[in-house]
Length: 249
Ligand SMILES: [Zn+2]
View 1 (cartoon, rainbow, N blue to C red):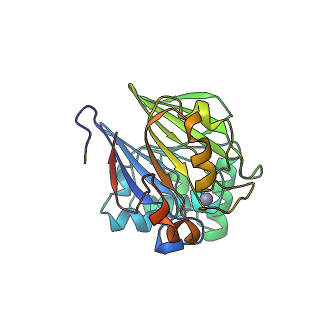
View 2: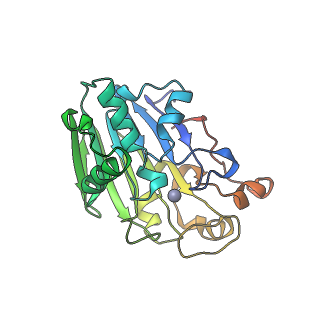
View 3: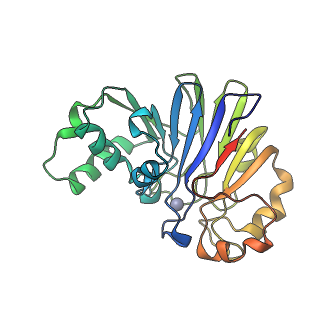
C-alpha cells in the first residue's frame, strides 16, 4: 500500500520482542523510498522475515541500527553471509551507534569462525554519535539517545525523506527525548513492550497514554510487543504493528 502523496512505504518485517512473543519476529522494518530500500533495525530473525515476504535482501541499500541488542542487530551476520555466498555487487551501508562495526565483525567470527567470505563485500560502515545528523542517499538520519541500555548505546531514530519524517523510538522507557524525536513526524513507531508493567528499560501502554499529549505526530504505530501487551490488545486504542503489515505515510 503506497501513500498517494509520497513514494514512501513501510512494511513491518518484525514487531516482536526479544523472546518471540506471539510468534512475532524480532524488530525490523522495511522502508522503501523511491529506489532506495532501507531496513530499520535488523534483529536475528530478519533474513527469515524478508524471505517469508519475498523481499530480496540484495535490494537493501541501507541498514539503520537503533541499538546493539541481538533482537535489533544480530540479523546482520546472516545477511552478510547470504550476500557473500551470492557474490553481492550492490553497495550496502550499515549505520550503527559507535562500536557497531567491531561488534558486527566479532559476531560474524563467533557465528562463522574462520570465515572471511564477507570481507570482499561492498559494505560501508558508518557509526553515528548522539544528535549527529547524517546525510545518506537522499535521506537524513538523526539519532536521539533514549533510556534502555547504556551498554547497547540505545537510540531513537528520526529519518527525514524529502518532506516526510519517520520517527522510531528504538527500545526505551518514557524519556522527554521522545518529544523532539517525534515532533511533526508523519509516522511515529513507538515501542510499547508492556501494557502496565513499569520498568526502567521499556515503555508500557498506560504510561505512554498518560504522556501522549506531549507528542506531536500524524500517525503512530506500536511495536516490540510482549506477551503481556498482546494479551491486552482489546484494551489498546492505538494502532499496533503486525508482522507483514504495510503502512503508508
Ligand atoms: Zn528489543
